[in-house]
Image (tube, rainbow, N blue to C red; front, side, top):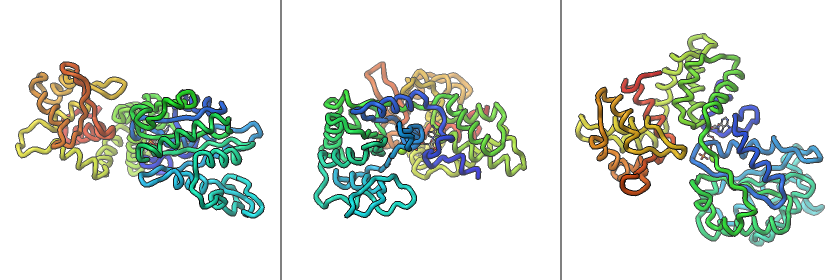
Length: 394
Ligand SMILES: Nc1ncnc2c1ncn2[C@@H]1O[C@H](COP(=O)(O)OP(=O)(O)OP(=O)(O)O)[C@@H](O)[C@H]1O
Ligand SMILES: [Mg+2]
């Protein structure tokens, strides 16, 4: 039961469990409501892009009151234009046999076939896709969600999708393409975006704000008919660093800890137990990346502590910090003042391949800024710091 409301490993698919994101949802819906507008949703890994795409259809009701049709497919590295669109069309159910002509029905009960089965053998072209989408979108709200767009090979295929958007837009087809992917800028996802600038609403998914993370906890524990003390919530929200994954993960384990203690109130002590479980169950690849970053033959080395200080450094809205931002957390971890020269070398090494490039560096001399390459890393590092007694809990 607890794992049905707290889902650290799966995107949200139920509208009621979807927290916050009011601005982003509105932006996407505004675009959907304008014929000729399409959408790209982009941002860091794990910030909640797929979840937003998943709940769109439940927030859209066509004028006729019908639910929107919103096939979602994951792109992958071996897709061609043809295979990608066939995947899309196999997500669309039809009720009549091919001979009588297909009537798109959504995947309602009684569905007997998919739209893909009606397609000719010849490879699909942007023009053909436009015609099919026009037929399916007639009289209904249709959004086609192409998730994991960053996995598509760069180049002609992405260009062909841009052409499709252009063609849909020029012909005022009643269908909206929603491209979703990990990227820092829209050009990283779709280099051709300038040619379709006016047709493409760009929605950046930022990290979640504290009230949004709190809402995830409140909704979850409300469903479980449990409560959580304010200090426990505060702890989870601050450890999550804007990533909904950690709010779910720590919500899940702390609720379990309370239930094991036969309590319906989750306390800070339960969060402490949750941290142990979270670290113990961390994905091996993250654990390996951590080891690569901090391991050293010298037991007295500072890599682990400097990385912890980085994970606690104040960051700007893009997640970057400067060497000077590490000074305060480093001094607090070490119990005496540490200045930049004592850890500058470590910061540099964290950007090297030998340390798995756990940090990324940007900017010129005297203006270097650093950021964790994997957004999931800082919370993990801080939780380890708590377990190792290097950081106070609370
Ligand atoms: N608005 C939200 N409310 C509640 N939980 C959310 C919300 N957005 C995301 N989550 C949770 O956060 C985690 C990551 O979400 P999701 O998979 O949607 O992110 P993503 O950006 O698509 O990730 P990736 O870049 O890996 O594809 C999941 O556990 C999901 O349940
Ligand atoms: Mg996703």
